[in-house]
Length: 213
Image 1 (cartoon, rainbow, N blue to C red):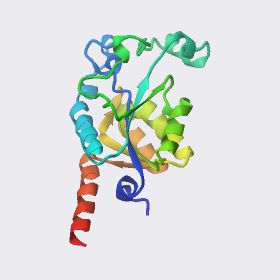
Image 2: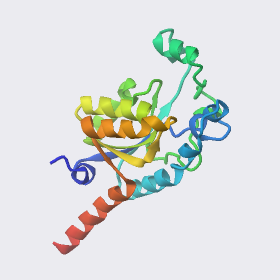
Image 3: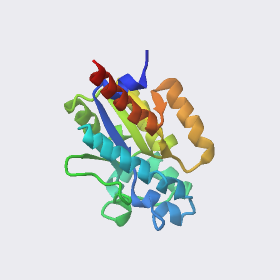
């Protein structure tokens, strides 16, 4: 049975936070300046901060995935050409305030940071290497955007035989018509989708089982 409780508590898991950065989330970031509603991103802050505290208390590895663009990794191909044509916000440029973490969502000294320059975290080989070095079997995924960076990372994780649990109240996306379809697609084909309360309950349930045994 593909049980998210087992995937979260029995399998070796890591909490992954994707792209919670100023340019995407903050009021004066590139996305807000381009007219996107960033309030939905900001609303994730308390949920993710609480999950971070809980994961660290459980000694669960925490991995921050950070979008970082520069002239070298932009390239001259389809990625940069499409972004220019679609007038995509010029976000998360290396060395700028916009690339930094938003609000209270910040890595601790013991957390890991993996940089990327495309939607999927696996574009950086160091991500897969880190997961293997930590013997990770399950990714507990949070962050933005559900239908792009989150789903792309989830797909690639599944293709590499990692289990995936996406926490639906810890992710959102720019376009309302993309959020639910993306979660449905993930649940149907790539992993499990749960709430943060369900995630907490798995650990409490395990503790109760240990105490009663």
